[in-house]
Image (cartoon, rainbow, N blue to C red; front, side):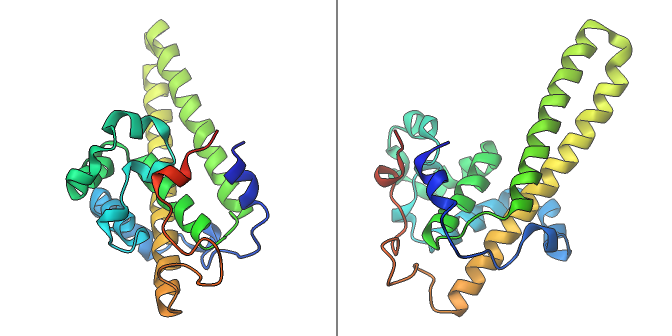
Length: 196
């Protein structure tokens, strides 16, 4: 577990929208245009200041290695590519950024749902491999793939909605840029986000 993940456990604040209460109309919008929803959420998480944008906000080192820090040349284009090609990392990075900025600890339900998603993705992979060995398992693998994809999309929709609701609440409280009393009042830059 990373040092930041350990530090999140000590955060006292709770999210405005625990995942158990999010599954509603806001999530339905996700399925109409998820790439646009991710782009909008990522831009909102950095207060629409594209100077603060780095690939996945530095939470995933491999992204920074691929881009070589060149995303500042055209941050809107890079964010668009990130939203299309790296949906999961993009959503998770925005969620972690908001949690870190406002010192919000993750909800136990969040962690359970993420673990279930990870388990379903592994099951899907195993079923696909088994279907390669025994073609009679192809239908079973397709059903598991479909279920895993629906669960993944639902979970991502909830994360996007959760970040959106949290940012809307913070803006209403005049805290869009973070708590002025806390040391985390700025959007973390990639250099600050690297972990050992």
